[in-house]
Length: 217
Image (cartoon, rainbow, N blue to C red; front, side):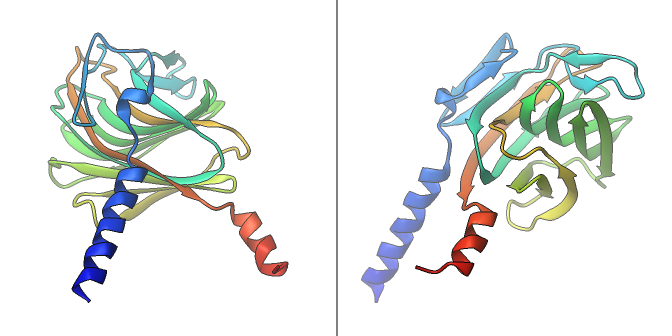
């Protein structure tokens, strides 16, 4: 029995490592001047006065925040642990999923007027913004997104185990997505952001599973 338990534990460890993405193999959009990957952990100093936003309310479009990404098609779950030394209004660390300049979601922690928020910007041609205020400054936050059909389900956690849903948003299906880590400092001169445990898990196509259920071999 003990041997079986050891085999099971080993299998779980291997599966966890398999899902962890090798950050050195990922690509930059808007590479920052200062960054480091060590022990599969990304540390960056964000580019001053950078952000992602399309048109709505403020009347401008910006698309210059540093974003380290890999590409993924189909349905999947992605999660990442994040922390930062927030300094200025709108400083943010985010999980980001991007199809192109007009279709993306960034979700994470954003510091606004002394309050730390779980923040989501959902952009389909124009950006919309939702926030959920936290009582205290979080030491770490884990963000998770599940892509199924034409939607993203978005969750956050402060312990890496218990997740709370914050949003379900429309996201175009049948498109390859850039998935990764983004940080920006729209009003400030930059800050240190840290990302760890970035993982993507493939999910079998939901429609295909239904077809297989109705058409057993």
